[in-house]
Length: 102
Image 1 (cartoon, helix red, strand yellow):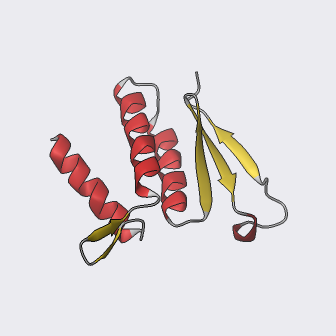
Image 2: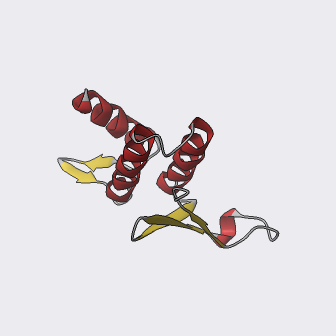
Image 3: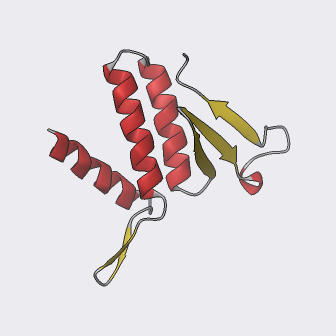
């Protein structure tokens, strides 16, 4: 089961352009942090600490990260989302914090 989940994750990373290949070299600049965030979400979901809509919101943020529209940074057990200025309108915040609600 875990192998299937990781296979799906690798496919998703490729589809979002976060995992590319040059010959036998794998370029995965964003994939490692995204993978840790997905594992964090899986744990929270299995512990019933996240609801479906929260999980979907987090996954959307990870997708934006893979597309290089936002940056993610770990601080303890908190994922900080830093919005790239050129990707947002002047009315939006340039930084937001997403926590697991604890």
